[in-house]
Length: 255
Image (cartoon, rainbow, N blue to C red; front, side):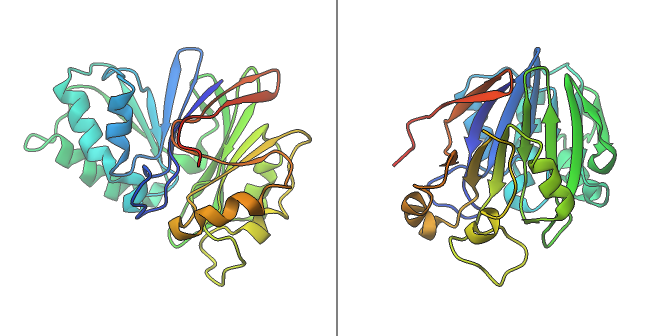
């Protein structure tokens, strides 16, 4: 399993790409979330229009979904023929459908097949066993756990982890968790560092923090310095998993 962090920024980050990752294994490629600044990050990697097999949306707030229109339009313009799976919370399908229809306007008929799936019932995707769980967010958000041949990955999306989501995180060899604030925050819809520190992890598992409020990011580095196996996820970071152990390859964005 290989991981490419396309972006780690919060909704209105002036410097960073909106939070999104690409996961690949056995020739299958999954994009998780696609905010408005994500398509250019994909183009910079010189992917072809057929290279991504599925898109998983943790939820459909604009910073996680608005790039779908641009990316689908690019796929069609570049001659995509491969089928595409789009997975999202059941009640947010109408919002995504509108974004997809606009991508193919005025015909609203894509030249390649799109299969819409509900994240609530997802158990298998490409080479991975999958499980999802709700988090506490202002709209339904489904955290995702993937297990492949070599190991496992957890991606929270937005929101504080429920017991069900925390149980999935505890089974992951690498967990990427939203951590908006350094201090305990009365806002119940985003993660924070005091709360994240209480979450259980597998022995030796890595924990990457992302979607950090941009004005607080500089203060996070000293705060996590003594926390074992915790890092700030940055766009351009890559990692690969072998026999349950993730190996990080930091990019150039670390300050």
